[in-house]
Image (cartoon, rainbow over all chains, first blue to last red; front, side, top):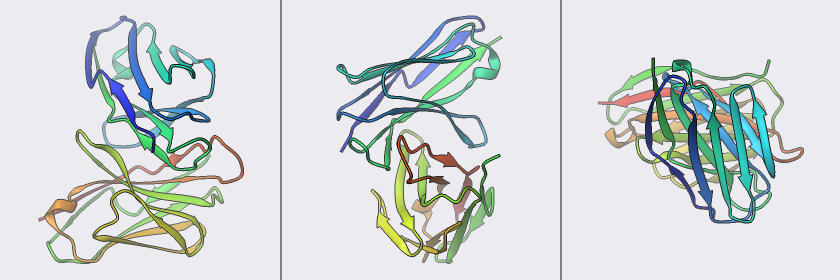
Amino acid sequence: KNEVEQSPQNLTAQEGEFITINCSYSVGISALHWLQQHPGGGIVSLFMLSSGKKKHGRLIATINIQEKHSSLHITASHPRDSAVYICAAPLNFGNEKLTFGTGTRLTIIP
Amino acid sequence: DVKVTQSSRYLVKRTGEKVFLECVQDMDHENMFWYRQDPGLGLRLIYFSYDVKMKEKGDIPEGYSVSREKKERFSLILESASTNQTSMYLCASSSRQRGPYEQYFGPGTRLTVT
């Protein structure tokens, strides 16, 4: 079974700063998921990536398959980016079930 | 617009009560999931269903049961609620057709058992 670890657990930054959240996993996978959870509970999928890099607006996700490591970056951070960011990986390659990191609580101060 | 809905956002129940949490998806997804989320522990899978009437235990099934009589609806049942089942419960669904099996989440139900 895959083990997923995220760091840091909590991150507070000033508006405009460049943010990096890290995720490592133990078993080879087909794709890694990055999720966002705002206060109130709803979770949305930000990225699914199996190689290289993906970009959506100010969010960038990268993955290194050989090192079993992924990063989520936020450029020009804004208070509305404040949320919990969660990475998730399939239990093993091609599995439909996910195992989740414990999340990174990001707070952006104006 | 894809949608997963849950029957309640907030629920307060007494110890020993039978509790039903319902989840409905409108995307014709085969897979449905029930998770609980606790601080410091992340999301943990309670039960998974890959088809009508089919289910698999997840990591923490004790004290829970599920029902899937129709493809769009997946119910989580707490037979006799206990205070250690106070938590946020999240439902999700995904298609089986091909990877990487993106999961779509409901808004969550915050259950308090007193």
